Length: 66
Image 1 (cartoon, rainbow, N blue to C red):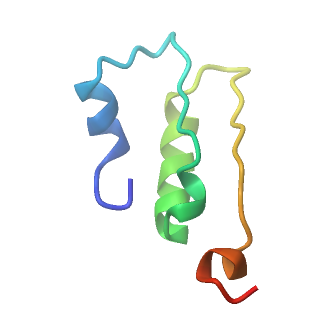
Image 2 (image 1 turned 90 degrees about the horizontal axis):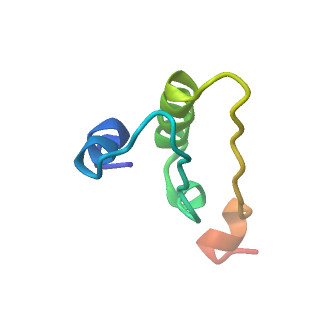
């Protein structure tokens, strides 16, 4: 997602708009700009009433300075 386009990846794997989408344990490793782009894209393709659920980690923990 930081290097690849989410829409392209979904098309390559036959994503259907009426199905559920799961991107597990990815968001916390992406740069902030890629997170913004990913959430904006998912928001644009999600049906009304859809939800986004994600996990997170503190930046300091990922950088090993916490």
